[in-house]
Amino acid sequence: MNQARVLYCVILAGGDGERLWPLSRQKKPKQLLTIDGCLTLLEKTVERIAHISFEKKVIVSTTQQHAEVIEEHIGHLVDAVWVEPESRNTAPAVLFSCLKIKQQEPHAIVMFFPADSFIFESDIPLFTLSLEHAIHYAAQYDVLTIFGVPPIHPAIEYGYITYKKQGIAPYIVSEFIEKPSLAVAQNYYAQEDVLWNIGILCASVAVIEQEFIRHASDVISCMQHYFENNHDLYRYKQLPYISIDRAILEKSHSVAVLPLSINWYDVGNIETFLLLQQKQQENAQVITINADNNLVSSSGKRVVLIGVDDLCVVNTDDVLFITKRGQSEKVKMLVHQLKQENQQEYL
Image 1 (cartoon, rainbow, N blue to C red):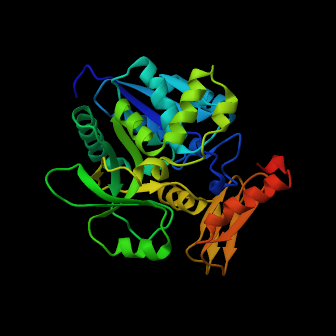
Image 2: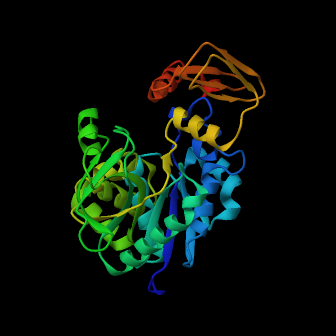
């Protein structure tokens, strides 16, 4: 990379992690959970970024609700923790960081990372090489580069990327569709040259800003008003609640993709978290008799399962949570019910 171009690595860590309840709470959001019993998901993300050989500034972007606990947890490991006034999804979060970076380094390259991904250690060298390739690419071309992995089943919770394998990667994206219906996901899964989006974006600050001007003028207009009016919170609350996938990636014709052959997981729901945790560490507190395909997390209590299959069981100090595997996406509905009933002690 041209050394005149400053690199910013921004970790988006503003999510509440409602689908990981009861492990994820307001005082301990999902990015501060640990799968291997050692480092948290956020610490793992910072550690992966550290492998990038370029000089860089590492920023964590979060919301007012989580700022204090994240600063305490990770502040000493990064260059700064930036606080969004309010959670408005990933499109405003990306633009918020870009405009702050532009004030400091208008020609910077920026790479955005989710805080809740999991990648096995054996895949880190290949992952790092791909990140560095994308950084070089962003320094030369006015393109948004994203990353994808081959789908392992027809999922409806991910973005799908189609592309034509011509020339050398990154390849120009033919189509991007975020969270399709099951029928569409099944169709994509049956095709070749289709990838899941893993939520990492690399480009120059100027290119990202230009794509917002082209495809999300309402977002950039509100954000500019916010910065130009002494960080007026009212202006920020007017921002549309929209993901970067919907606002930009589905619409832009300037997106390229780097395919990755790695074991990648979006730790987006309690079942995925428990599955990875089971792979990473033994749970001596669980006894099973004629019980198969169950996932269990327990804090201090012995759990005994007899004659039951396909369950997710989470036993915390104040909640016993049980669901059938495949139903964990409905956890968010439960959290909304707790909010409506004002049961703050469980949030």
